[in-house]
Image (cartoon, rainbow, N blue to C red):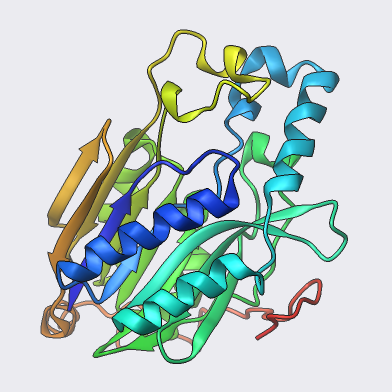
Length: 308
């Protein structure tokens, strides 16, 4: 199966324009024969980068400006944006993972969510990031375990996590235990954070890892964004990407790429996963559920129209 990891910048805080860009990139990847196409964390429509800017983080007034704009640019899981992605995925016969900023039922909070979109079945999973990382807790709500599920596509079983969730051993094992064979790891974009853990997951799980990062350059932030001056602060590259595709046992077979938009491609062979598990299957013959076990609460914390 051919995999595509799409490293791209969103149209910052513009959900419709970012959706249109995603559709174009989806088509480009499908034209190259990709059957699984993966987009970065919160690709629709951007990472709250101002939270990592010290001069903003100490000002309630500036934080409020960013918060309001972010809430206004969020989307519903059952809205037209993901519906358009599904329509194109169905037309192309591809499975898509795409990160998005999900509007909560209260309409005053948001989640960092990852949608799994099957071409025939539509949205088969919405995983909300379990615990936002550090400064992200100022704007993203805690998610839940409802989306910690795997999905079958062709010969493979797929699963995915957002950003630093990939560093959580129990979250990874929750997917391994369901037979995960291709792991989707989405990030806003920072090679220093992604490379070691992407290779480790491949070695630990004996699985393929599609580690897909966003990229953000100063020119990707519109002049109309009121916090642009503080965020840019003389930088040309804010998030540098670092996407890669890793084979079982840790060999990088595509990437990593930094400082540019690109689509990485690689072929995945189910036999490679099976062969890699001769000595180690962490949720199978090399596990001891009678000694060590994991319980996962998969109830949706707050209901939505896309409950699983």
